[in-house]
Image (cartoon, rainbow, N blue to C red):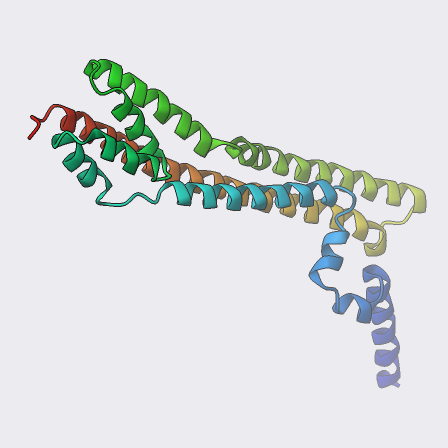
Length: 233
């Protein structure tokens, strides 16, 4: 007899769990996509923000990495040409080298014969343009890490509204009646925070790479000015 009642209670418990989770066997095999779809319509803008952040990161990473490829012997060759008076060979080398350092040095070579201040100012202007090109679209990443958590917070509000609406319309406070609201609240909040964190890390990583390139440009500029002040052979 006791075994019979235990079996009946177990069946009731299983039915309650199935009702709360929307079907036991189907829910146990829920994949990540199914889980994310329970976050509601706000997952669409969050997915767009994630795709935008990924695209901008890889596009900028490739561009900055390409710009950072500077031959270690580049300035030594420039030095040899300038000191020997062969400015045309130095300009030919800088024109055929595609990176910010070479373009900045080429501008300095064009201004040879003018005052050092004029040469420095010309190279500085080119350097600012090159930095601007490297920083292009980074503001998109800062926008993503700023507003993605806000969308998550908005999802929390929608989830709570959905929760209270379900309770008010059904008049029941059961796991089944609150499950959808909790899903919307938790999934959108987690997704917004994760996307914002990834965008923040990507933004700071790219800024670090740009700062390294700026240091290279400043070093090359100072070395070039020193070269101009050396006596010719």
